[in-house]
Image (cartoon, rainbow, N blue to C red):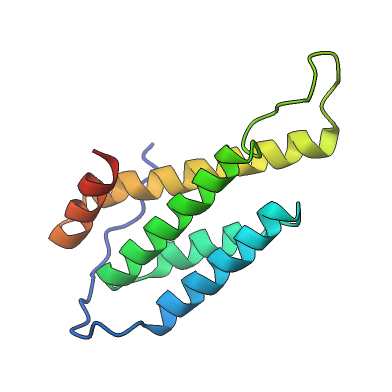
Length: 134
């Protein structure tokens, strides 16, 4: 069974001004950066991914893709994506394991969305993805 979301109709905005959705993306990203560095809650990541999946404008989608990419890059750099303990003899707390599984799930959601965009008929999104990852 395929987990592909249904194809969307994208509406390209003619304006280069920052949209309301791009402002929301920026706010989510800033909130997540603060949470990562202060070891706070990362629940906003779900909201950001849901917002990305609901966007219709390719420029907003591109902004969302890059924002989530930066968040996952920070999480990896800060060793929040993997179960690493300071020494090999320490056990990993149960809460840390839950957070790790949740982050992996969110990364999977993001990855599946990116894969669905590779099959998209809108050229801006295909070019955005191929430039980002290859």
